[in-house]
Length: 126
Image 1 (spheres, rainbow, N blue to C red):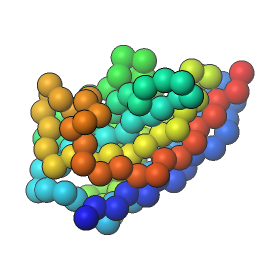
Image 2: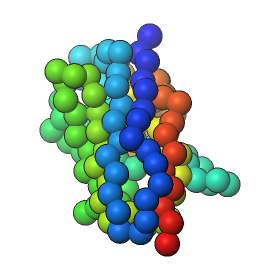
Image 3: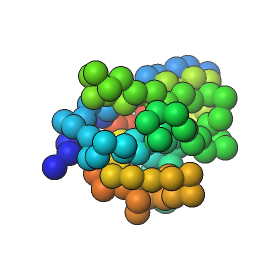
Image 4: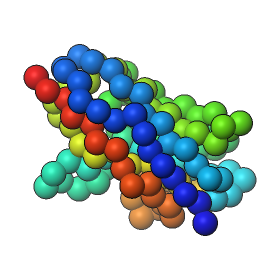
């Protein structure tokens, strides 16, 4: 069983930055997918950024390209999401997720993921 714990959320003003961290108790496979999803009130949970294929491949939602960066430190079993130029529309609960495997076709699909953290709230005020 893989346990994921997010941290780093908070409240910032428009244009600010935050770095989210996700501490994992382990990885679900030798080549897992690790991702960040977010869910705003009344909206579906959506993929924000995913890293897979041994860290060589990434996926970013169009809305965050150029502003967010996903990275991982395998020695620390930690996933990060650096978020810059934050906008009010980035306000959401952010979740860390892990999948046993994924590819470029399903990395963004919520049902592909086997393990989820409890989430960390990000609030961006104008």
